[in-house]
Image (cartoon, rainbow, N blue to C red):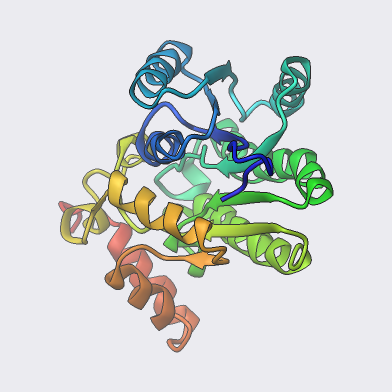
Length: 269
């Protein structure tokens, strides 16, 4: 894991850190002695998590309240890091959300906000922080994508497309930084027990009701271990790995129809 060369750990920035996978990843980083910068929309919850992790693990934990779906938010976060004199050596791009339903009937602003958060914020924050890591010749980037990245997703068309971007972006960067002392990892979980399902409206879908739903702590632990090992791609769970691999060999039209059936609600006819 990245350290400063004198035995101390470098700072880790985690977005979407107030709950779910982001919170669990922050806890793992704190356990290993990394000072944290936690970023999320919900400032009260963020401060509560910061107090809990700082007290439990004895590390410095700072917070920055920001809604990264706003185009100017990343710039404000980076400016604040510079003002506080924090050099980030581990970046976890975890913040993201999904929306369920036919694209033509969806909320336009919500879909665009999803693109800004899932794609633009990941790209912008990585662009601002990666050069410093390369210059220092040490660093880690962990981008939380999804098994949704491996195929189109009817009824969540924009979400699946954004995660395909995150996966492709991460794999390309991993090759670009090879040999620099920096690694880039894409974490691709399947259905996970977090607030994501409720916020996306997926709680009654066949995917969540009949599929294998993993715990956020398990997903985070697998992703964290993969990042520490410098892996480019991490897919938690044998069932999720099999699903991601199997779509490579099936006709894409058939895969797309199957995904639509899995996305449909359990009570749908």
